[in-house]
Image 1 (spheres, one colour):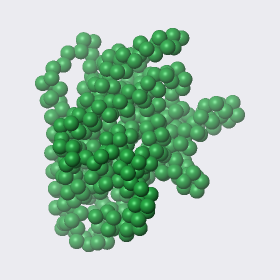
Image 2: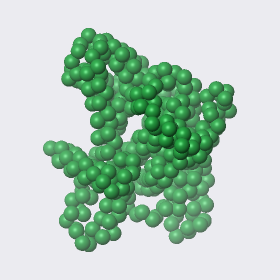
Image 3: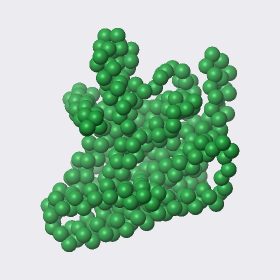
Image 4: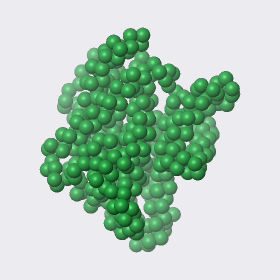
Length: 438
């Protein structure tokens, strides 16, 4: 019952902040909600404890007691990935298959190790610059940070890129990468986390490969099977309520199966969503049923994103000391951006540039690689220990910077990098929506 009360309170706050943003700030919805939550968190930390002690304590306990990791990784992420995948066309993804695969696999692994190595050698520099605050961060924990911060989150950026009228191919790369790299990063994180918990870590390349193939391969195969089965069922009925129930059962039941067999839940949802969104959607003969199904998942996507970014903003209340590792957090932002640039550069060198990339794509891909709720959820899933608070603080710095600074500027960066003029964007905006999406 307490979970219901907590969830209800968060829904009320999300709706209130969404209204304030829509009425006054007029920022992208998720960014606006998160910014308001951050401002409220700062007010509570510095003013509320003295002026409104009871209200402050109640809100703090609400955030502290809410099991964000379980709710995000066990429920919200599955719905978000399915809702995102169901709206992606397989034909678009097929055309960008090689960049998406390389970005979401090789790119994630590269980013993990680059971030880990650079962070490891940055810690002594920070200790030298700020001798009053000694930081200790073993190499495995630096790698752990690399794994949890490498997955990108397109939620805040895709809508902005659409308004900036970036090419469809580039939008597909960013969306496709973010859908698949969650599963890869979660597997990497799990492996490295196991190593940190061993007294004498010993693990071979073969054991990592087997674990990865089981989690990733099993998740994809299960998702394809669920997608094909649900698509066959959707073809045989013409009822929007039953169609919605079928897709809900795929997400909720599919996760239970994936969890039981230790498959990747995120990859299961992505594969199932892609197949249902393309094969199942085409199999539905009724335009009313198809419209209801699409609108339902759009609403689910919007509501869960609002809750996710609300909680990211309130996560500020759980950080013990905002200034203790501020300099390391600033360095972490630079390191993550540099690692993102290298992890994008490698696939660009391997693939034929002119076939897959337009001039200026590198800038948009690097600056549009936002970090989000998955990174927060993974760091919170760690057992309480000597290094969790450090990783939580620098993760928060990177996530907030990427969502607020990168998220609010990526549209202008994209227009400048791709040389999209305002006149061109305005003229394309005048095209009817259905035509523009084709």
